[in-house]
Length: 612
Image (cartoon, rainbow, N blue to C red; front, side, top):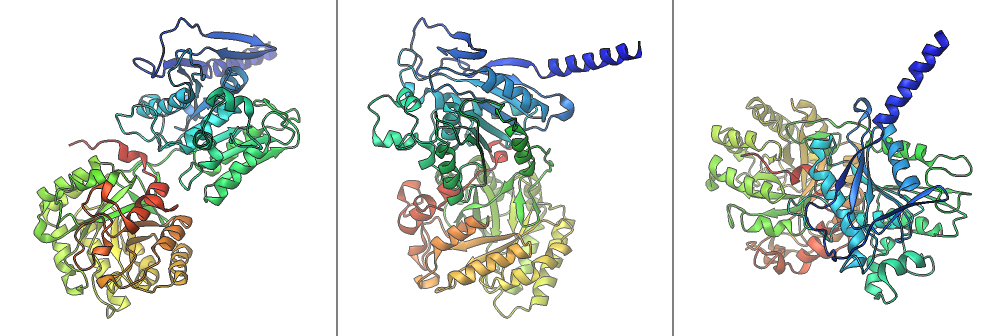
């Protein structure tokens, strides 16, 4: 009898787990009409071939949601793209079976039933799959709260041609193929590519997928665009890759070369090549190896299986700034002299946002006004998806003006606005206060007192402290950052170095950045341009961007312009609008491999509007 009871309990537990891991909902991808859909009497087809479930003739793309038990749910989600050469979808062993495995480790899984390229069904068959992949990302993020998902932990996984689709989603997120009225991020937070197609270029192109997606007359530009290995950039999401060395369908070089491209761009990646496995093995390698276990470890190491802390403001941990939901923020943006031109930011912020910047450093002075004026300019930055770094310029080079800056921040109407926007705001206490005569002891003592008074006023946001000597002497930060952090009741400080010494060596820049990392100091490069005051040449701005990206250091270029009367060459734009970017400004914002456009990652919390 006792044995029977145990068996009944085990059977009941197994049944409960099976039911809890079953598909809970099928969600149409589109509320209204499917993009570019043709009116054809085509019926979806599901069949079983040799034990493999295959779906074709997809006309109603959807997500099939599998939710983990509440007790183990992590808030992480993955969108699964089954393979099938863009002819069919292997929705069983490369879809539903995989979803259930992710449920076991606390991940909500969505099997994407995407449209296959078919001119009978779609006006633009070659982009139908990526349209559906992007729409899936939007749908999951837009309903994240409802489904118990963290919108900053949404990844994508694909097998074979589905791996190609997932890789395209991870390398083409800046190209919008679907309507995105909410302005949500299309970038997957991570990718898992299982025997993927990553190249449409010889010698490792997969001819079947290539011809089915692009046809027989694709241009060189189309081949390159849909070869993810050629589209990798520094902002490509981290990736986990699996392939078998004996894969004769899709050569393992597809994964190897993609991995190498990721490494060249300093994108975290992990690659596993198994000696045997062939193609299409799904979860089960013939050798008994379980790549899913390695995948779980990879997810865990990168923090995607941990629940994130939620705060009411941005905060510093170690040397990094974090969003209230825990997402790491590497600042990428520009300075804008709003108090001089475009005081409200309404005109300039929408133009700056076009670069992909995630922040704007707002130059302000006391004459610009207090609470009401700040409410407007900060609110406009937030509405355009820019983290406002608000700095006070009155003490530039003047150590004795610091008390006046403190008095400004402690005004009741200013404190009220800071608290209103504390979820989004960084306060730069004083721009470049003091010259090179300030002692290290005075630097620590003065800023310690200021920080404590601001904390006592209820200001909890990150406070940014510039180096002395007009921001140029990094030693003030490197030697005193640890003490200042220790003395801050909120432990929430950033330190800003302004690189304005003409002729400064790359070695000094890299050494200072490396020392900040060794000392765990949250360093930011608050200002730089190609030249200094009076257009004195030169500052290696390209090296600054490159090395800062390599070491995950934030930066803000000086300045958007126009308005640099001392040196017009510092202006990134001629009229303040995006289309007038020129020279070093265009390089820094768009064209350089380490520009704002190519390295800025906008944290998810900036996509949610503030409640007024």
